[in-house]
Length: 445
Ligand code: CA
Image 1: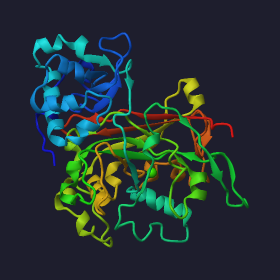
Image 2: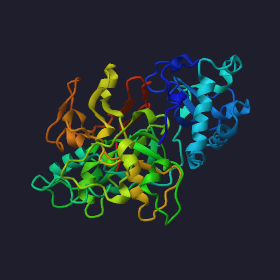
Image 3: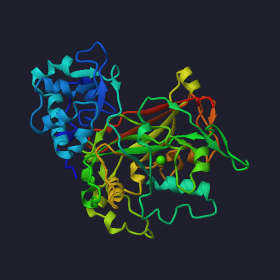
């Protein structure tokens, strides 16, 4: 587990003025990404690795060009100079940590004047840059670790039975998602067509999804992978997790209800997945690690291959997560987005390390840049439920918006905005940046 060091010192400030007090990207965060600077700027035109600081992006190839990095930090910087972060993630924590420390020193208030003089060469306005998906994703797996979401969904679909399946407290349940349709924040989301069948209907019809939903999740970026046939032990699993993002697992509930038996989600989920584009590193999140929430007394202990004392003691995270809705009418009126829910990753039943250990426990190999979704994060109280399925009780209870509109599921023009924030006394607060997506009408069929 990462220990705290000078890069977590809340008292340190940056000479990049917008970083100081920035809601997401103060000096103590330094998330990794891939961007293209605005045309017309120096060294424009190519995708390259960057680090967000305040409202700006530090251009890593430009730092290398000026010889600002050395040793292990230079190794990391070289690995993030191309169009993806895969090579960097594959290096594991050592070079990534060295880069964090080197960049912290470059951007700290007491950096040499010669570095500050290079600002026009090495920093770009984030707003004017194009921010890309940070990695080429080889595999995407969506877990189901939000136990309150699992209970809520179980109650809606099996009102007379046990809400949780018998395996839930033994197995970090997951399905294999579709890597090709993951897109960064801001990419419009086309409403899918598909086979839908309502309860009373005799046969399905093919048409536009009528119950389009979002799912508020944490994304987990795999760092160094494992060889096929060689499981990662739970005691080492945390070392294979490079960072985190926000993830919206867009879900077509009516398509899901018809297609999902017996093999689980397919076209209801794989038409689009949105992620926030900055990789908030495991190192940046070190101050916000917490013990895994205690299991109920009657719950089984995790089986030995998923049970590690260190992981149980500090393998969970205290990250506040929030979902907001902005309808087309609200946008036109200049209204603020409406908060749908606010919850916390502490409500996940499995830690990221348990997810990774479980994923490899049969010998399945993971590669650098593979992506996990945590599963929908819902809090015990209904102000923290992470999907419209839950909030609207499967469409039976419309929610009223301040605009006078109401919603059960998403309409065309609606935008979902996910945000996350970490706070702890004595530490600098950090955020994830936004994960946004606006619904476009379905293609004509
Ligand atoms: Ca999901």
